[in-house]
Image 1: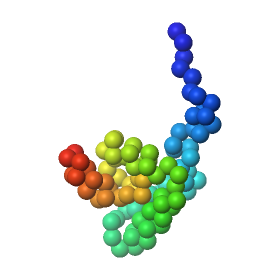
Image 2 (image 1 turned 45 degrees about the vertical axis):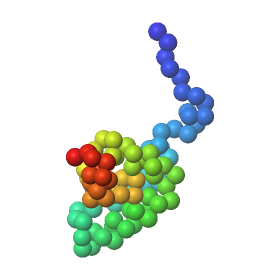
Image 3 (image 1 turned 60 degrees about the vertical axis):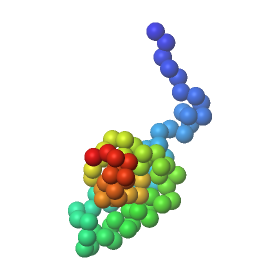
Image 4 (image 1 turned 60 degrees about the horizontal axis):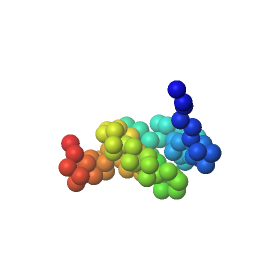
Length: 91
């Protein structure tokens, strides 16, 4: 049985998670405890970090494909993603 081998270019790039801007940031930043009040600063900070992330799109795509309900993924909150799901006719 042969084993699939990734192309050298793909192996150098790694997965999108390995290249994410949030990789070295406290994960709690992306899971605010509320959608209002003091958490708004936390949400804004997380979204700012996502804006400059080289893998923002794959991150958001993954969250949408997997119906991730909590946290900020690809620069969007749970509410943002819910709107997208409704537009796309999911859930």
